[in-house]
View 1 (cartoon, rainbow, N blue to C red):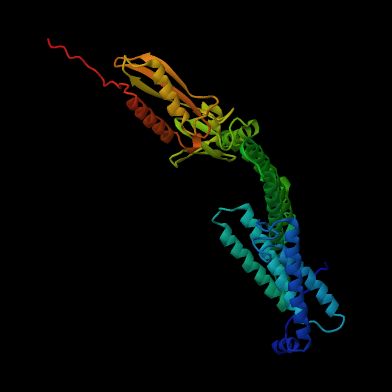
View 2: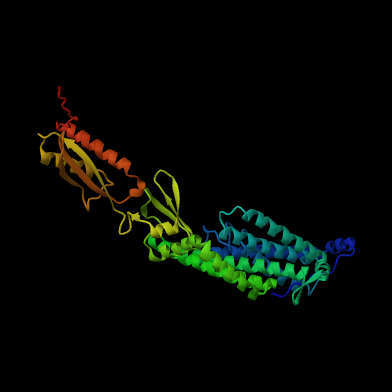
Length: 423
C-alpha cells in the first residue's frame, strides 16, 4: 500500500464543490459502491471459511462490517480503484473517501482491541470516544490540506531538554506512536489469551491462565519500553527509578509482591484450581477466579470472599476436591434399644441409595456407632460428587426418607429421657 499524500489545501470552497459536481464523480461513486460490496463479500466469505459465524473477534466483530477487517479490505480496494480511475479521469471523491476509511480503520482497531483486552473496565468507553474524536479530527485536517500547516506550526514550538531539543510535534508524534505500539501489544496479548484459554477446563484452565498472564505481562513490558523509546525518553535514566522501585518492593511493597509471586506459585503447582471446593479460614466455597494478586472463592449462599494469594500459600487450606470431587456426608439417627439392628441398617442404606445424587461406588455405609443415653445411635455415611449443587437439601431428603421408613416399620424413635430424684 503506497503512502497516502495529503491533498492540496482548499483555497476556494466553490472550486471544491465544482470538482464534486463533475459527471466523473458518479463514476467514482459507482466504483466506491462496488468496493463496499466486494469488501463485504470477501469478509463474509472469509468468515464462513474460518467457521466464525457465531464468534466475536477483533477482525470480524459480531457482524461482517463490525470488525477491523472490513474497513481494512475496503481501504485496500479503494486505493486500487483510485489508481485505476486516475488513469482515465481526475478523481475528486476518493480524495475524501480514503481519509475517511483510514480514520474508520483506526477507530475500529482501537475500539475492538480495548473491548477485548479490558472487558469490564469503566474507563474504556471514554478512551474509545477520545480515539474516535482524534481520528476524525486528523481526517478533517488531512482532507482540508491543513495538516502540514498545523504540523509545521507545532514544530516551531520547541524547548531544550539536556542535550536534545524537543518540540510539540515530536511529543505528539511520539505519543501517537506509543499509543499505536500499546494497542498492537494488547492485540497480540488478547489473541494469545484467546488461543491459550480455548476449550480449557479445571486444572488445565489454571495452568493456561498462568501462561496467559505471564505472556500479557511480558508483552506489555516490551510494548512499554518501545513506547518510551518512541517518545524520546532515555531509558538509561530509568535505572535510578528501577533501583528506587526495588527498594520500595523490598520494604513497603513486600506484601504486594508476595501476593503476586504466590499467585504464580498457585497456578504453577496446581494445588488449587478453578472449580475446586475449598475451605479457608472457616469460609467454604468454590474457586471462581485465580488472579495474580488474589483468589475469589464463592460460597453456595452467593457470598464471595477475596483471599490474598499469600494467605492461600502460608495458611492451612482444605481442598475438598484436590484428588477428586467426592465429598463425604453423614447423618446420625437414634432408635430404641429393643429395635432390630439389621432392619435399621437396611432401612438406612435404602434411604441413602434411593437418592440419585448419592454415589453407589463407594456406596453408603450404615453403622451402629454408639450406645446412647436414650437409645442406639446409628451413623449413615454416604458420598456425593457434586458438592457445588448443595449439601443441605440432600441431607434433608435422606432424613425425611429415614423418618418415613422407621415409622412404617414401627421402629421406635425415643424421646430424651430424664429422671428427677426428689430429696
